[in-house]
Image 1 (cartoon, rainbow, N blue to C red):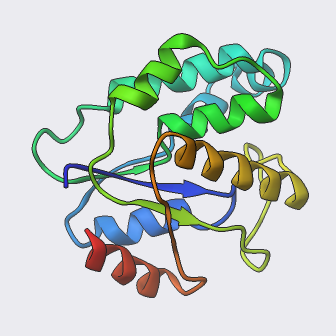
Image 2 (tube, rainbow, N blue to C red):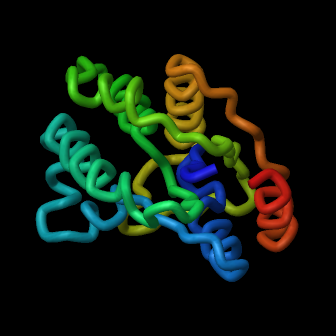
Length: 170
């Protein structure tokens, strides 16, 4: 296993899980969208130019692709998540994003963090409502399946238990 992914609903504990897994020596790559949203003009780009936002996520994800060399790496989201975002926005999937989903294969498991009402919180970058988060989850999970992956659903459990679940499967 070189590359594995955690995907799923906004606010479902993905970043917390990656932080916990990193404490066990697994290299992690944070969600690229968060950095874009926190940068100047990022929120406006997402709201007003979703295709540009998707392309920015793609460029950032592509730059992270080879991170870690031969060491195992756990990504917070991946190329198929961008496809899910584009589908929700009703946009056509650019050829280069589709090609990356087909050619840049994650060898490790794709873990699915399902919507979890009890821990869901909105913040300055996570602007989706609960219903939008559930819709986003369905779109990204379907995108992963469409590209030939079988996401493994994470338990709704504390971060330590979730991390152990992931570590046992890596």
